[in-house]
Image (tube, rainbow, N blue to C red; front, side, top):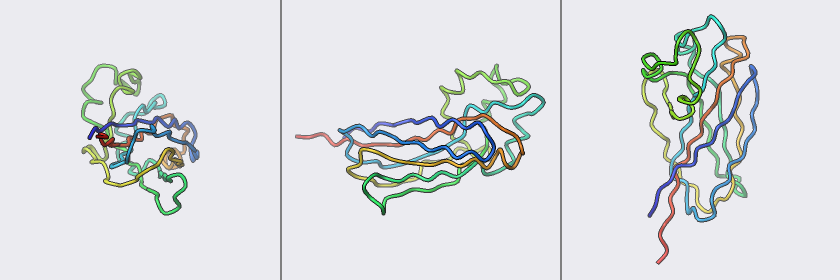
Length: 160
């Protein structure tokens, strides 16, 4: 049995924006066993700090639906919160960020604590469809640019 992670970036740029996306699942994948979502790549407007955002709670809501299966769906709230790395790593100064580093860093944090993936079981699926709705921009009444990362843990069972 081999496990992999499929990482999907969902860009958000306007307050209240609804972002529709689809995820192609490799044909040799037998099942999806876990899912996780987190905010990363947050570009703060001039004069805002990470602490202004971290206490806002829910960044948005995500819904994911498996193809050809009306009863296989997943819904979650995606929360703000940042790793302590954001405060001590060079490049995170006065609201500016090192985009290359953030894109490398998964950062699924909520309320300054690591958020574990949710266990699910979706078999024989080649496509997932989803929608993410921004709440953070509406709360702040600003157009905030950030990326929502969706991470899917998959398994491939070795054929004998």
